[in-house]
Length: 261
Image 1 (cartoon, rainbow, N blue to C red):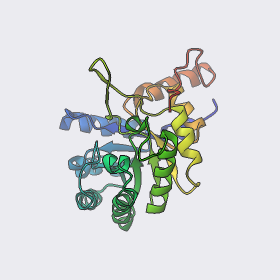
Image 2: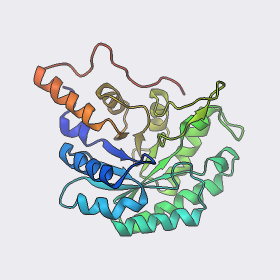
Image 3: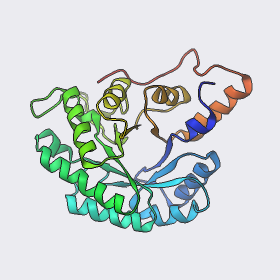
Image 4: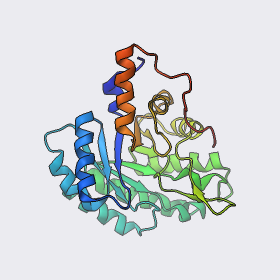
């Protein structure tokens, strides 16, 4: 296998963000994260204190989402939400940019919004991942093409102190012409673009649409160091199965990631 179990498990932020998640499901998810030795759990702010208790003594970090999922909270709300999460034991913060302000080209607002969260988190020795929600940026905005827009956001986030830039929330559903909602999440194109648009000081996280081991391996190949996932057990069980059988990294019908920009 190209990557060890520890390398791939150490990329996964086990996502526990569904709106209907119960306390029992949260506790089961934290136990799963500890059993599979993943990087972190990614949870809602009210659950941070409980998750920190459950994961005490493990190497699994507690990550909290801020301004989630659409980034519409005012900057001071995001900063204070970050402060509370860190006080409760969050090691990492996944914040959502103000998407409307970004599409309006109000770059100073966007940068100060990100900086406020980064500055607060860093005072607590927590790290920050900044979510772009690329499904909403497919047409670009503010006079920029889609790729130029994402490059601009990478530059802004690096200046503001972000530790990661992140493709998606997993909840950025776009309404289609038939009235149904869907999303792509992380794509090969976007991961490549975002990795090339930041210095090595800033890492890249994939989220949304990575549902199997082949997708996780592809994310690693493209230079991302973290990946949000709900299919954690399936991915890592598949790793163990292939390892036991001496299989190659990728199956013949590998799903890979979306190609779109």
